[in-house]
Amino acid sequence: MQTDLLIGGSWRSGTDGERFDVINPANGDVIIDVAAGTAADATAAVQAASEAQPLWAATAPRVRAEVLRNCWQTLVEHQDELADLIVTEHGKPRSDAIGEIAYAAEFFRWNAEEAVRIHGSLSMAPGGDKRIIVHHPPVGVVVMVTPWNFPAAMITRKLAPALAAGNAVVIKPPRETPLTALRVAELCEQAGVPAGVINVVPTMTSSAWFDAAVDHKATRMVSFTGSTAVGRVLLRRCADRVLKTVMELGGNAPFIVFADADIDAAVDGAMTAKMRHSAETCTAANRFYAEAKVADEFTEKLAQAMGAIRVGSGFDESVTCGPMINAGAVDAMHELVTAAVGGGAVTRLGGNPVAGPGFFYEPTVLANVNHQSPIAAAEVFGPIAPVIPFTDTDLMIDQANDTEMGLAAYVYTEDLRRGLQVSERLHSGMVGLNRGAMSDPAAPFGGMKQSGLGREGASEGIYEFCETQYIAANW
Ligand code: NAD
Image (cartoon, rainbow, N blue to C red; front, side, top):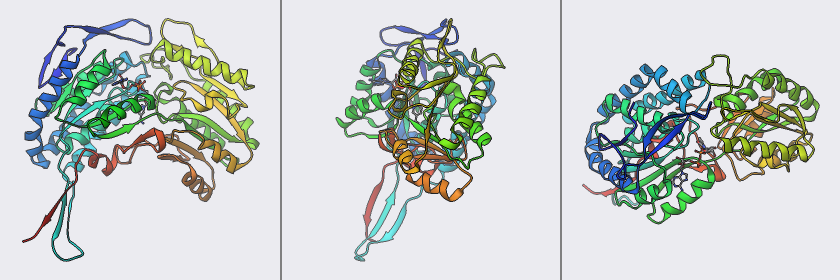
């Protein structure tokens, strides 16, 4: 297994020789250690990317597309191995890890198809004095910083369109899950991506690493996925060099159940929206607004479904929720649950950390939660479902929108007209209407408000990694 830095097509240790441990969150054990990149390594990686990028950009789109399709095929062929790696360093159930690899690989197939469809335009200026030619060259070198909750997919969702458009990249994977990132990059090189086009530099010193990467004059763009708090810091730093940015940030999704909904379908959807990938997705249902007439029935059925969840190692086939990423995550959740109960919420299920080894929390359902409770305001990255009953739809929509986040939302109703009307009133980049999941490489993923800037996936995703050049022409 490669555990060094990938810079310019070769594997090397960091300039100061430091390494850091990768921890298995299911038992707290050290899996292996990985080279820790320094600021100098970040600089070297940007330099390597800048040297490789012109040739890659000059490669015919059809050839780039074929390389990307090979990446898709190679990842699919290594699905089992990659899923094992994800379960080991992230902890999610193996079936979710298998699903993540399929999703991650799909970004290569989708963008292989997009690589040959980066269209510009030609038009006569209204004054008739010139032609207006618009085309979309690649940005150049893109720095990517990614989170631990999808160790493969949060990389490929950026990497595939960036490569399709002709860019070279430097990736800083999260400290928690660098192994999947290194293996994905190695497989992409095997699939035909030229040396230096993908560079991966894990680090223990993110801030110094990022400063060095951003200060290199070849860096033209930063694509970040992670928390809103860190996104703000990186945005400020990018302002120093006026870099193009894409920011995929935190969520706080409302999940709305109207009285006319198919309650069993709503519970199924709620389980998907809340619990997949160990309840650690940015689109996770965070607050459940159930119309008062059905709030008890919905809460009861949700508690039954949550009660059937088995917590444990993702390698155990009967397990449906793995560990949280670290001990701090478990403590943060317990604080929110304690505050909600202190504010009058009723615990219908769970409500406590699970004794170690490993970092586990009981699947938890809280009834009669108050919209003012901190658990409704915070992003809950864990298996906790707070249910807030409502009677007034307008007030409920105000409450659903009463957050600086605006990534995902869910609506369950049998009345399609109402479903669409409510969806349009939600300040959210994505809405699941009678569905508990919405991610798709062919759809634009991203948030409104402080959930982000820009979109990943769909046709929009590839243009984020392009410049726009206009040529005023006479002939
Ligand atoms: P995080 O913001 O703590 O870390 C994300 C990345 O930023 C990691 O690689 C981390 O090492 C790095 N980082 C942290 N501080 C940095 C600094 N000062 N300079 C440079 N890099 C720095 O987020 P996380 O805990 O890894 O992931 C969870 C968060 O990510 C949640 O808020 C979740 O909603 C969000 N997320 C969003 C999306 C989306 O598409 N909108 C997808 C997945 C996760």
